[in-house]
Length: 120
Image 1 (cartoon, rainbow, N blue to C red):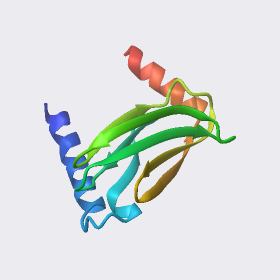
Image 2 (image 1 turned 45 degrees about the vertical axis):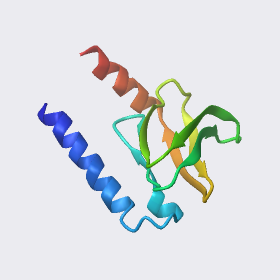
Image 3 (image 1 turned 180 degrees about the vertical axis):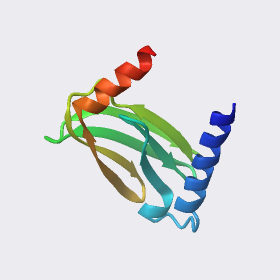
């Protein structure tokens, strides 16, 4: 319970900091945050209804995953990238205001560590 409370507190703090002014600019409406090993969280905040598309692309520009969300006031989406091969990927968030993209490196060591932790 203590760990869940701490996680929620961190997410709220990050969202509050990232979206403080709320004027729709790229840096203030979205954040792509690395988690443990090969997990990432996409946080999105916008006070008006909009459609948000999230794509994960490999270094060749090929889409390996695509999601579409109808957002009325924001959301958080967690991505576990452990099934992806080692390499460079880009998490891309697109809405009516533009695109926010973050480079993600997947390394075999992180995938191995995650598997070991899951067995314990």
